[in-house]
Image 1 (cartoon, rainbow, N blue to C red):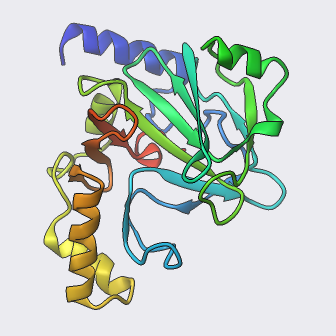
Image 2: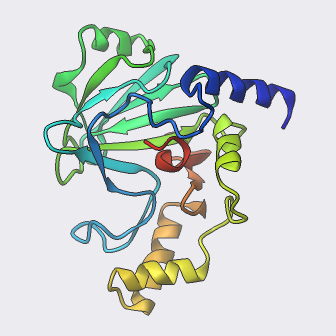
Length: 238
């Protein structure tokens, strides 16, 4: 590992995971939240599409908690976007480690005191600070947060090294195998031929180049440039 990358990873781990366990289970982000949709091939929303490629994690509440969103890491700057037909309220949270976090469907009425002024100026957050509560603004079937972990550009992020240290998988940067895709199609109760047609259509529509359980690499709708999307559960356990 190049020295600069090693120092960056070491700084990140010292700040957010002193045990160096690479699990990040103690990171304060969505206390009490329950994952509802995973990363990769998704068959959980047949009313929307029976098979889609989901480069994010969706999570809703568990019992009476899970709505509140806190900054999981120090955030150096923010960007705010609004698109009622899709993500609704979309907040970009930039770190200094080569990646940023995108949170969609936030309830705009629940931003913390002073947050609007801070976001308008592109200001950041300290790790653990309250941001807002998740909602159901935009294309949503219930109150939840859609969370994407995205590279700032198509270059290096420390997440690549975290994945390499956590998983010894030869397919870490390769597409799903045909067998894996077939298994998902069969488990979803979809006819194989129809399922493969759906998968190919999704692959082309989302302009994806790589997708597996860990990462997705595709054209980003916001910048129209290649970006790496990371599975936050695989990288951070959140």
